[in-house]
Length: 254
Image (cartoon, rainbow, N blue to C red; front, top):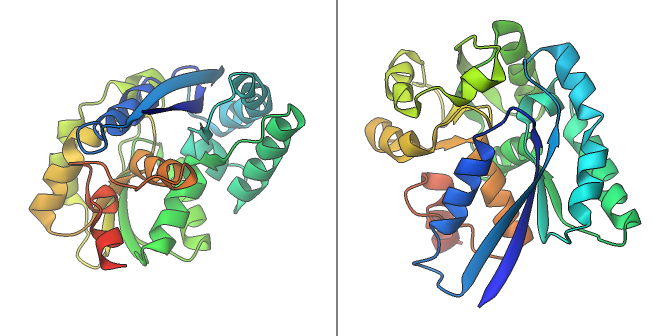
């Protein structure tokens, strides 16, 4: 039996990543009975999803990484996609380097992923070069996300903005409503659908249902984060009923 410590840097108002990330890791227990996980978080203050609040919040990520490194986590995730993407194109690379240096200076070198980097890296790794996305953001922030994804070499064929700026309200959105939202999303030319391009908007219960309905890969920023975390831990990136990315089909083909 091996227990892994999963660390997350989350906005203070985020409630979803501490729900969906544990749910995905713990869903592995039946298939991988020798694995166990514990979950540890540090919080950055943020209530409303605005460019100003996101920039101020991002400054606190260094403190959070340092605090989590005291717990000697086995992997860390920066769990706010738009906080990274709103800071400038390719910013996840700078953020990941800086936070990795911070924990290394505390004598706790730890693999670190960001949800922003995880999403674009997974899409590129799997060759999903055209995506349609759903976000809870106001339209200007959604456009920043679109620009960021496209700068990474992935074409966004369509996007839907639910325009909810209160981050607590985003966490209370019903994930099953995504089954209706995806019906008005034009994914006809897309290789995949990003059902939640936001780690605070719940989507996990709907991912497999939408994938089965539309017949193409469906993922979320949270799914991409788990995929990258599992790879950093040198574990098979497999979670049941979490969509194509975590289905294990990719590994079977390689």
